Image 1 (cartoon, rainbow, N blue to C red):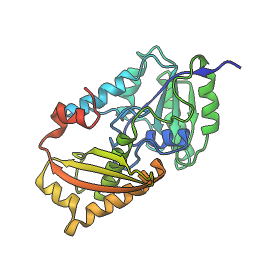
Image 2: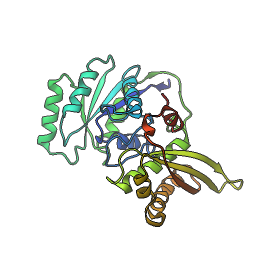
Image 3: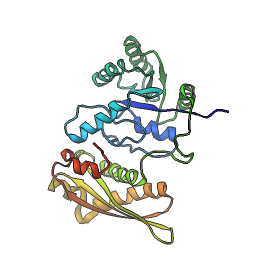
Length: 282
């Protein structure tokens, strides 16, 4: 039987469930998930939510999203069925109309959307010329078996691009850094904005192979933010580290000794050298 392979792009507004869908399809966590917009920064297997860039980091994220709209078997356009088709969705739709690749529309969160909300969103999409529409719930897993079958139908005979046990093209150190950032965003809520970056400075497995020593630095842009991230007596930093360590141990398969530091780097999101260090290549 011939081997089939190919590439798909996943695009959509912030918080429509892109990372949740990726993790569900892959079968394990490779993209961070929070209830805050614009948490996906690196090109893991999906694209960051499309927004108006406000700094060099934002420009990088939008370039990544734009680059993923060509040379793929199909584009998956994720829409929140409960919220409906908003202005940002319409902007993405205009860009998708210019693409030569097939577009598959995924109406997500159908488990919590009403039939009226789903029907209204579908009517708008079909009116704009998008007829290949499918109802799913990335969180519940509804419709994903059918989605996988649909994606397979787009694949053609080709090489095996990656080893069979490889689930992402990003290095473990980058994924671990993103896990730390995810926990920071979850625990800090609205106290600290998105000006948080994480640098995984060193990862080293001990000679006995039982413990991975990980040293990471959380970057922030203001002195007041540093105090909030650390917390009274280091309490918040300990909570972030403890929560992140659990996910890292699950990913790496060994015990993790995680050491965290917090450093202020003014306007780091506009400093290309810092972005390069964090893995956001220009």
